[in-house]
Length: 250
Ligand code: CAA
Image (cartoon, rainbow, N blue to C red; front, top):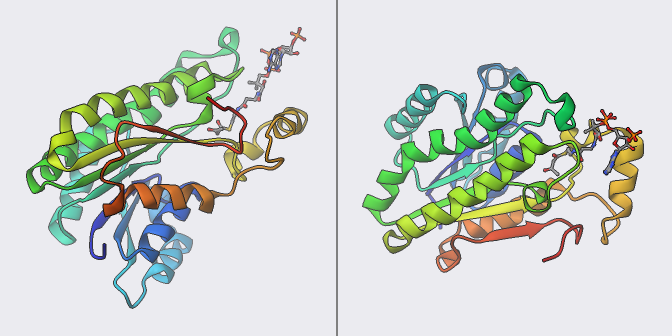
């Protein structure tokens, strides 16, 4: 469906960019939401300009800090005023602060929960009424395999990512009769900077356990997200979609 408006938080991260690109190719008007320093860079502006194409797809950039409710409110108002009503929200902003619990400082707990979980509330709350009133909406929460199975050294991240799917299932029930679907996508280990931060010996062990035998690519996640955002995906809601190369099967 062309012309629908999609917001992607963390839109300038590696996965966020792939999702923006894919939605733009599907003729969505996409807005990548990210922190001011990311949005303000010349490199991001060049990337955004390259996404526009003749069939109407495009990617605009708007500053939003998902940890700040007022920032989310201002960002969404700006989109509504300058571009139009929001049809799709992809909650993709996320961070890691890995440490075993005995070493996990309070600020590392708070940072991960505030960004990865509070951010989902802060953004979704801004768009849900408009979607239900207009009778169409797609919300996709980007969680993680580690929210499903847990991961050594990630009590904060696993808790936040599991919490995202609880949010998905509850909200999916609230809005199912209004044409709005809410889904979770749980990627496994991808070729991204987040994963490159893992010590090489530990990453090697993790990759050895992935049946497909490699890390995932962000375009593979983006393809699934774009399908969930499409009109054809109207009967898929409240589901947690694993995409992890077989690392965790259930
Ligand atoms: N299971 C059980 N024991 C383990 C273990 C595991 N998986 N890994 C390490 N240990 C043991 C060690 O052998 C060591 O034992 P001894 O104390 O007996 O020697 C002990 O645990 C080390 O504990 P520490 O608290 O000292 O751990 P550390 O500080 O050395 O390292 C860590 C902790 C930084 C979290 C490190 O384990 C690590 O980086 N792990 C990978 C975490 C990970 O997978 N993150 C994913 C990031 S990407 C992402 O999150 C995207 C996504 O969605 C997939």
